[in-house]
Length: 161
Image (spheres, rainbow, N blue to C red):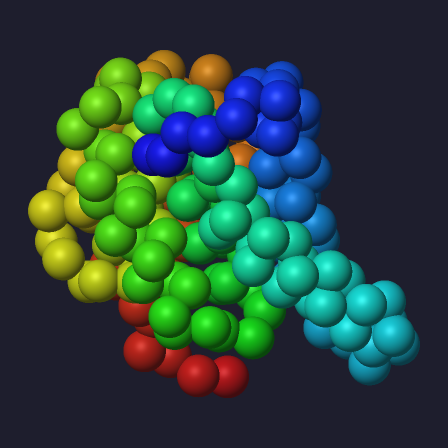
């Protein structure tokens, strides 16, 4: 987490909205891999990649903002051209902010993406622990998708059709 001139920083609500919108574009890109949508897909991936690169330069004011940026960057690089340097910067920043976060969905999602990049079981275990605290009926579509992604990583299917 870094500090600078507050006037140059986005408001928390704007940052949350920007990060949420970018994650939604990432999820949408997963369904545009069909050749009929190649132009849309290419454009979307370019936009996501540029946004991820930019987000890593945003200076945050709180652990929650830092976690939002890290999560969004990790989601973004999971669907676009991987930039290993930027991914590791996001992972390192995410690991640093985890102890400062409340046990909530943001922390659970961040643990999933850290696990996806590091394969360190402690992050998968922590994500499972956190999600077990939430009633199934309260899980959002993003929660369900993240949990399915975690299961796919932890227990990959070995069947090929």
